[in-house]
Length: 238
Image (cartoon, rainbow, N blue to C red):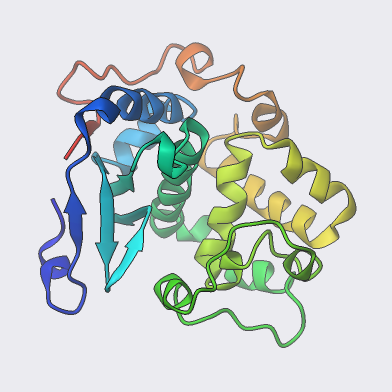
């Protein structure tokens, strides 16, 4: 399941098999999330989505990660806070990392960094922030005033980008509300929209603001993934 180098003593990636009663719900969540993208974009950048009960690497528990063209998502159940929206946001965040990595020419790091406060520097890594107990994803004025949606967004540029993307794909009202009075967040949303628009022109502000009513399954010229075909992405309940 994991890349060979992830099994090293240093990374030590581990996963616990998902509980039987969460399999169907998890698969439906991921299928819904994937339908928000043009099928070709998914085919070209993603081959597998692994859904597990628990996930860890570098000695810390995590809810999601990715490698090359694979996504790993944890779903520990509703009682642990893994709601449909929470799990779907994990998918969008991890897929955004893959898209950012595979289409780097569509994104300029310096333009994003210019939005941040003068002399601000991102942290070492997301893992480092988790270990230090600095991975909160709650909205707090301390971070919003500095142009970040939450504490974890200050860990790396990638996580900062992820924090915007996953809320765009869920059409979170709070994100749009914040953007109305927060210039920096508004600028980061704009750069994110520009990146996705370069991936496909249908990705516009209007498209995201119409979610979840609109999806590529219904609106992208009939081009949607048939999960019954072998050519479609594999969703595995590890």
